[in-house]
Amino acid sequence: MSDPTDVINCNEFMLQQLQTLLGQYGLEIERISSDETIPGSFFGEREAGLIGNKLIVRSDTPVHSVLHEAGHYICMDPERRANLHTDAEGDYDEENGVCYLQILLAGHILQMGRARMLRDMDRWGYSFRLGSAKAWFEQDADDARQWLQHFNIIDSEQQLTGLVRNR
Image (cartoon, rainbow, N blue to C red; front, side, top):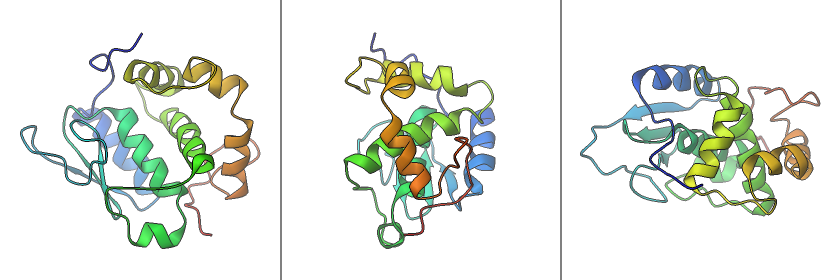
């Protein structure tokens, strides 16, 4: 099932949408050339970098990676956000919130959507105890949803608030 070459990457169309969506959170996207190493990338090649409020990407960076790193920025407390460079840190609950949030964010990206995000997460190798991102999202993510609501990142209808965690 894992095939990291069969995911949606950051072409110009995707980058425009990502900038519009993530700009409301104060995030900026910086595109670098395909022969450069991505600064601020915690996982290395192809994965998005995160330094301060900048997401650094190449054309081969998967959209799921950009939305995951954006999720970390949105979900971290203000103190960590102020010193953010490469390692978003965060605990188990925050990581679950980030994964849930990236799926919700994907629903606002044309030619991506939630279903394709779930597929790309599985293709890339995200692992969930129920065996797939879809099963986790639909059956086992109540704690992640509640965590995001607690910090006012989503509302009770699972709609994005456009706010970053402020405590």
